[in-house]
Amino acid sequence: MRIDMVTEPGDPQRPNEDYASAAVPATGAGGVLVVLDGVTPPEGDDGCRHGVPWFVARLGGALAELAGAHRNMTLSECLAAALTRTADTHRETCDLSHPRTPQATVVAARWDQEQVEYLVLSDSALLVEAADGTVEPLLDRRLTELPESVRTLRDRVRRTGTEEDRAAYVRAVEGLRNAPDGSGFYTAAADPEVAARAVTGTRPRADIRTLLALTDGATRWTETFHLGDWAGLFSLVRKEGSRALVSRVRTAEAESVPARGKQHDDATVLLAELN
Image 1 (cartoon, rainbow, N blue to C red):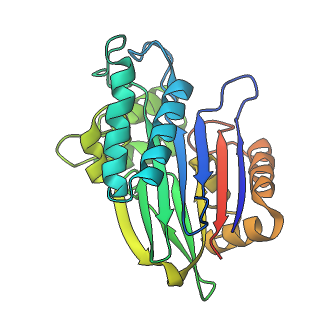
Image 2 (tube, rainbow, N blue to C red):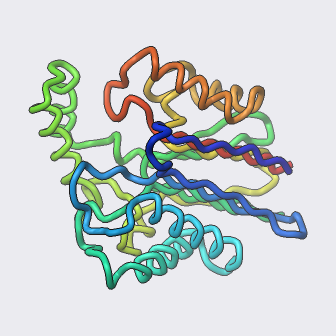
């Protein structure tokens, strides 16, 4: 087994809001990986005295521990328990009902000799290399599959670029975050029930050769700058390493302003070769 992992802040003057970990038991018969991307709140109060880096470190650590130690729990159950555990640590000091209470996207995978189990929530990504070398992206596409009214606002921003239109688009998207009626998209915050909304599944262990987990700061190579497809991204990491992907993204960010989001974003890449 080989693990190749890198995580880098988009701005060296700001804390990294990503989290990554991988654990392999002493027997070598299986393992767990967890990657989180903290959601940067807009300037102003988010109801929490601790901040996003604090949140992702505790949620990620709890999820990795639960997934590794409790094989009788599904990854969704592990995420729900991790969310409850994390919320309990600051429930008395912070307003967890605040709409921008610290939250994160989640990718998790767990494997043993029989199967590979996965969970994806929001716009981080998990790429799976099959035994025959084909690469499949396992994605939660709800953030990109927005209602027509919101897509219209997005297109207007791309045409005009005005702050007024951008603010209207941001408000519309935020109104869909963790929407109780199921019409929006979901991130892991304080409500454990969101774990049931994640994209989950299992694959036979014999069919999977490699896993590659990425935050959206790294998937920019494909999804923002269109430097190659998912198979091309995977091939780059396999041949040149995780740091090479982040370096290519940084070069693209320096040469072109992204259509949406930050100029530079935190980027995390975690490659786990199971064979």
